[in-house]
Length: 156
Image 1 (cartoon, one colour):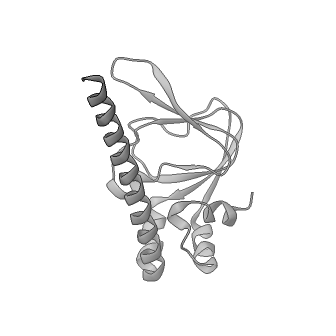
Image 2 (tube, one colour):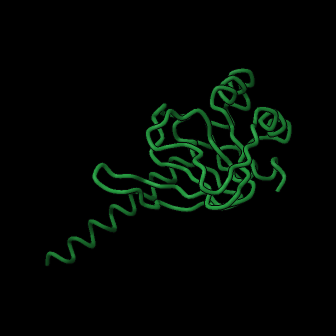
């Protein structure tokens, strides 16, 4: 799939114009990753987000007293690793290709520089981010309400 098409499908970039997407495309780094290798480890410093052009990436979580468990698998067109761009936190999961895959990395330092240079692009980017995060927060709130109601039904 063409990179611009992949980028258009990511919530962070949905509001960007074609010109802004072209600017974004210029900072992207292509990686061909082999099955069994590791893109990053849980606890690593996060330096970029990723978009899967082709393949499947397995996201693993390791608890303090457990072996690594699959958290989820992501396929072509999916993206991951964007949250540390906002909060600067370390990686929460380990990312490993389940098959030979092609991923595009958007390095955070280059993305920050791009957004600093183009205030309209930055406004579009952060507005899309705010919409996504508010929708996610609403979803989590609804899930918590549901779980709380389920718990009350069981205690009667």
